[in-house]
Image 1 (cartoon, one colour):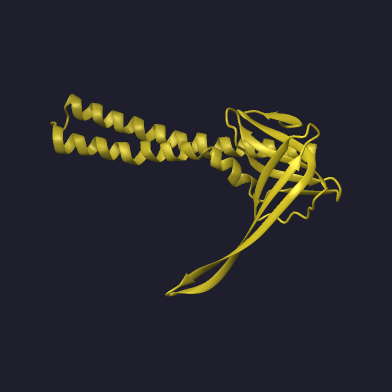
Image 2: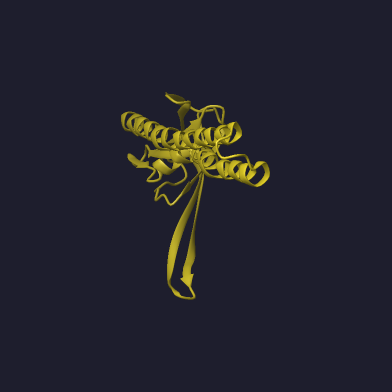
Length: 193
């Protein structure tokens, strides 16, 4: 259970987990990219697994990707994780090492917030591209109505509604809403760290 919870608008909250580090595992993987006609390059990924115990004796485990967090067993940490209401899993967005008085904020905060809004993008693309294609296919291959008939007009109207709904989902749901949550989370992190 979190030590402290900060509620955000738009069905999100930040849980703050405080405790002493019991264990910390870190591994680095190097990936070879390219080959054949492309130049070879390498990319390293650092994976960190942190185990802390809160004041009630409950253990919590957190994973980070490509964070450079200097911690060791015995250090006191505050771990900030972003959750969507109704979800039991969240993403670590900040860590404060109390012993070293250092704060680490995720460079990937915008991608973490965007990941919660991916369905808006997915459904928007489906409504803009796939459903209209299926409707056009059904209309012109199977039904084959007269050019100015009621069925042709109704299908055209339905296709237009689908495309506008999909565009609205992408613009409002994906592009605007994630930014609102991102800036609110960033502002709250700056005031609570």
